[in-house]
Length: 486
Image (cartoon, rainbow, N blue to C red; front, side, top):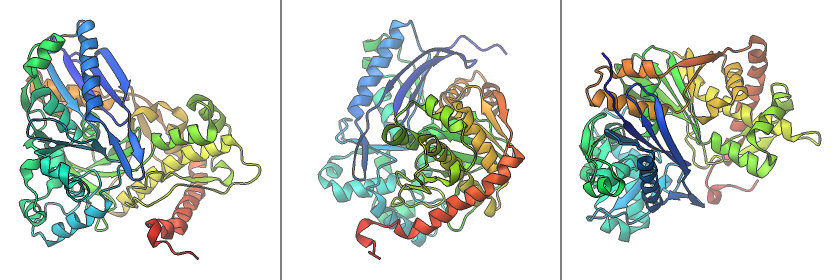
């Protein structure tokens, strides 16, 4: 069946930028706009301002209209977390707290305790994280009671965008899993309605607000529900065979591998979420592109392409230099916000090229660390697909293949999140019926990185050194006030 002529406006709010693109039903990108998003950091805080999101969306819509973009449907996604308090008038009354914000660390224990006391088995494989709604609400109540009292809804980034577009307060169905059960909510004294009405993927939230439509020359077209950004990318990755996974590497690295059955790690280093007809076993790092950017600005002071070219001349193992990329704590498999980065094995002969190589290798070691835990828990891990901004770097992709010993398939369009939005919209509008089939059509593999057996064998000892350093430093990964002077 030939697809009708549709224009899908896809909004992808990331940690570092807002991207708005116009696609056809076939997945052709006809127009695109992007602008940086500013983050404010200090101590454990990591926030963005919804007022900037609103301003950038207005600019993007004007740019779209100026380029004769007349959308038939709008679908939007944002990063995990980005929780924003909104008052009863729909006005944001506080900043958006992003997933790199560590201030809710002390509230995680309360949620875990409520889960343990609950009779519900729904959450058996989940680990409570800083990106979850409940710790974020408990932190707001604890640290900013005045704002909490005035809060009518606490919306995640995706929910905030959809609320701005339609006026409806919603929570995507995947983040809603992190509300666990009514029993857990009751034990914590939290009203489920605080986070908005749960909406399924592809559900119509409402029409575009008439004032926004008139201001930008759009029609009051339907706004369709989508999950958070990495989940959109996983949908677009067309993962349906056991052992096939997707490495999404941008600001962080997020890894998901399809399994027919749920994988339960009793230590909760990795976890499973429902995905199509099966499950995704998941694990994410706290830094990837953010570690590269930190090293570029503070150590190497050169553009990434020059840095990569220099690092390519260094043999695997970076001459014994090892980098621990825990610059924002670490998620899987450590799940320790107090983990800290380290550069180890330096000598007077260590060059910036060696350091650059060590930083790249550390991202592969962190990925391999997650894969090892998945396998330990019974998961099958075979082939990985590559997406995200870092997938454009061939050296890093080859290092990942050599470290893990896995073939890595590079996807032609690294912006899988936007393709996931397109697929969701196409199915929601009834143009096509099968989401898996649409995603498989849109996700095209254009090249493969096969592991080199010789380099893989050499990397085994270098990876072991990375883990040994990690374990040696683990006792120091505690809050400052609890560290003992030896």
